[in-house]
Length: 152
Image 1 (cartoon, rainbow, N blue to C red):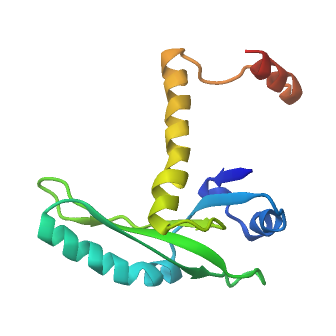
Image 2: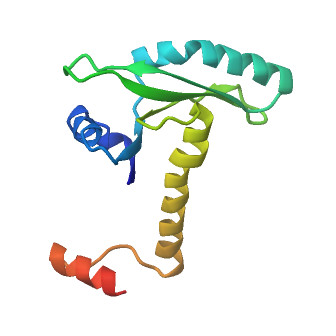
């Protein structure tokens, strides 16, 4: 089973639980912080160099181990995308992204093929909301709303 998490769910207790499940893979966004930005800084410098050379948006992928200070949790693999975004008429902008995972693939493969697939799925849901003018389920009974969704 593979689980993709939004950043708000990448909490140590949940990750500990997922790590304890033998057949579960996970990948989730992490909010940037000073420690993660330091880990990604060599890749960010490289992305700046590439962007200056090409005049285009460039990204460099990398990885490291990360452990939060607040918990006794173990170190986990973090993938980072060091991106420098270029738009005409604007200064280049840094856009670092961080993903925590227990997957073994390459950093670029995990980010582009696994993590970004989550966003593609969200786009399909948005299309349903727009095309069918669906914005919420009016039913306040959680169990009943799940049954209705399954029958639809």
